[in-house]
Amino acid sequence: MSYSNRQIEIIEAATKLVGDKGIQNLTTKSLAAEMGFTEPALYRHFKGKTEILASVLSYYREGLQKGIKEIIDGDSTGIEKLEKIMNFQFKTFSDNPAIVMVIFAETSFQYEKVLSDVVLKIMTQKKKMIEMIVSIGQKDGSIRKDIDASYLSSFFMGSMRFTILRWRLNDYDFDLINEGVSLWGAANKLLTCKEK
Image (cartoon, rainbow, N blue to C red):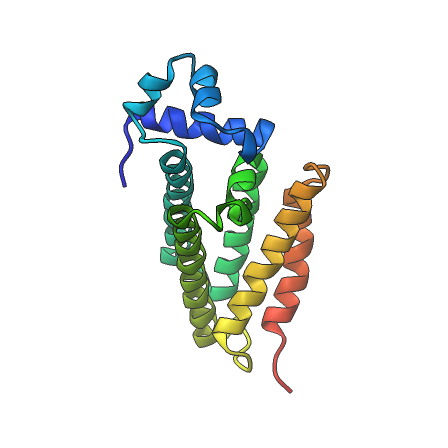
């Protein structure tokens, strides 16, 4: 989906507001005040809070898809691609911690089908891309073949998610990029361990 420059400004302001004050404090009124214009002006670009949050999620999804696709299209082995994805993801979140507040607010979205559907699309899309990379690595011999690609992908995604969530719940009090380096060291050993 393509967004106008003004819509991108609103998406970025909404993300910042959620990061600063929490998702429960994002209202069209507070967002309009943050942007310095009236609520009716906000409604010229989005129908309401749900559409704004769905756009924040979709905007993130597009950036994620673009970054991962560039990694997939590169000449690296499967295991090298996974390392690049972990680095890319942790750097993205480290540079933009407010995004984490939105992405990890899916429990707040459980009664809002539009938003829960977007979160599900993000997770499904990412899982599919990671599985593709694991399969590439299994074919090129850089990733173990004795465990199904689907399970290795779940392990990889789950370990990243846990680390990012722990970072958020600890008020971002540790260096996520350095933690990612340590996590990758363990993940690399588990993903490349050869069957006996």
